[in-house]
Every structure is written in structure tokens, then in C-alpha cells.
Amino acid sequence: MIVYVCRVLKQKVMVYKKVSKSKAQCRLYGNIGTWMTNGETFTQMLEELSSAGFTELEFREHCYGGSVFEGNVMMNAVESSDIDISVLIEGLAASFGLLFLLSLPKEKVSICENAFGMIHRPSSVTAGDADDMLSSANLMQSMEKNMIPKISERSGLTEDEVKAKWFDGKDHWLNAEEMVQYGFAGKKVKPVAASIKSLDKQIVEQSTPETIYARFAAALNTNPKNKKTMDLTLLIATFSLEGVTAESTDAAVLAALQAKFKKISDKVDQLESDISAKAKDAITAVLDQADADKKFEGITGMTKEQVRAKYLDLGEKAGVEMLKMVLAGLKGGTSKPTIMQAVIPGVGTSVTGANGATVVQNWEWYQKNNPAALEAMKVENHPDHETFKELYKAEYGSYPG
Image (cartoon, rainbow, N blue to C red; front, side):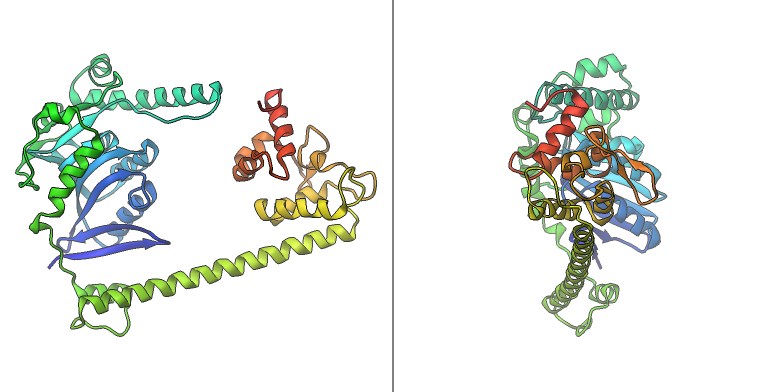
């Protein structure tokens, strides 16, 4: 009997199938980096399988690539796992879906006779100024320097041959025989999607990875061998479902499962709401004390209420401790520094932390500790946009263009 088990982590799910007591099977379909297939959920699933006593895991791959960063995490997780992992390419192993195979010996990779691989240079979509473009280009070159030696070692080609053959800016399609020839797979097997029309390589080369993925996915989804049966007893026990038994209908068990998840979700929402309310109360208490100490008075061009509103916004975005550190730099009375001086050491005064140490809240500090606040201040109509401009100037020597 086939069993499907869901790994749930606040709406992140990766599904695996229990084949036997020691072996599991999982689909690696679609795009690497989505909410279902990313480094976090992938690593968590491997850890869960290992903890549950599984010693073997087969990935059924039909993937048109995706995020290099998420893919690297997945490769590292495979290489460090104590589970015996193998891959069956059912339809497509494209872009990082192909590079993912390098985390395993070629003997652990099989490819269906009518499946394909695709290899090309890493690519990126970048917006911004010249520095942004150069930064993106440098990142792409660094990725290539990491990929090419691995591909060279697996394929038997020199690094220069790999660059000339596959890293020329085009998509390079490999049929099953070529995947085995260059060591990306160890052997060919009979097709899983046997009903799909045979694809000529020339047709494939004129298609996008998404097109090939859709063609195979349609055939795989209609394959009657893919029909799944739930082990209700295991499902009920795993999730401690109430009001259902192994004799209940599938619909009743699924309804109980949904009710269980809703109960968990509601509890998480309530906890988050309680935490938010406590944080708001703490921020209000800090602002009330600063108001009593007259720290919101005497700032040129702003009323006390306007100043308080700005610090309220800072507290909600950066947290209570950060708000305390910022307010600690204000002495109160008419000699107080401006908000700009209080939050940008180097432009005005420094901020003293709770332990008495000087905290330099410059561009680098924001990048490391609170990049979200820096990104928010970048918007022109944001209350602290002037703060962003001064931070930018202190870092780069001129205001943002």
C-alpha cells in the first residue's frame, strides 16, 4: 500500500511517498526555489526521513531549473545526508535541475529513454544603475567559476571545452544517450511517460524548458500507474486525527486533517497577534517615558506629535531595543540633536547601546542588522526618506540619483 506523508511547516510542504519501511520516494518537479521546493523544505524533509529511520530515498525528477542559491543548499544537503539517495529523470533535468545531479555519483542517476537534460550559463534579471549591473555580472561569473570545474570533472571535458561547448549563452539540450555519454546519468531506463509522442532533438532545441516540462507533465499526470492510495491508519496516527478511523471515507479523513491544520494555524495566528500586541505596548511605554523626559521637544521644524510619530514608526520596524538605543542618544530639552543626527552617527551624534557601548548606525549597520528598514526608507514618500539619503551620501559620497 502506498502512503503519502506531508511535511508541514507554516504552510511550507514537501511531499514524499513511503515505498517500504526503509525506502521513500519524492517528486522533484517544477521550479527550484518555489515555496514547495526550496533549500529549507528540502533540508527539513531529509532530516525528517533520517530521523524516521529511512535509509533510501529516490527522487523522481522533472525540473526546468530555478534558483542557483536554493539549488546549492539542496546539493549540500544531499552530499551531507546519511541516506542513500538516487534520482530518476522522468521527463526533464534542465538548468540547475541538471547541476543538481552532480551532488550524486552518476551511478545513482537514471534517465528515461525519452527524457532530456539541458545545460547553459547561469542568468539573471537585474534592474538598477551601472553598479547594480556590474554586481550582477560579477555574481554570474562567480557562479560559473563554481560550476565549470564540477561539470568538467563529471563530463571528462576540460574546463575550456566546457566553456566553449555549453557556456556560450545558448540552451544546450542533451537526449538520454548524451546524458549518459557525458556522465550526468549512469544509465537509461524504460520511459515512465510511455504515451508521450517521441520528440526530435531539433524540435526540443527550438522549445523552452517550460514547454518541454508541460509536455512531459501532461503525459505523467495521465499515466494510470501514478494513482495513489492513502494508508488511513498511518495518516490518522501520524497527525493524531480525531473523530475518524481506518474505516472512515477518504473525504472524512481529509476533512479531519484540514480541521487539524486549521486548529494549528489559528493557534499560530493568535500567538502572533499576542506577540504583536505586547510589542506595541512595549513601544508605547518607551515612547511615553521619552515624552515624559521631554525628548520630543525642541527639534526644529517638527511638532512633538510629529517627532513621536516618527519614533513610533521606527519602533514598529526596528523593534523595541533599537528604539531604546536611538532614544538614548537624545538628551532632552532644546539642545537635543535632530532625528537625522540621532539615527546617523557620523552625520551627528552616536547612539549609546544598553551596555554602554557606542553603536554606529550607518549604512553598513543597516545592511547587516535591518535591511528591511533601509529598503522601506528608500521610497520617496516614506517619513524617513531624508534619513536614507543622508545614509547613502555618508556611504557613497553623493546623494542617490
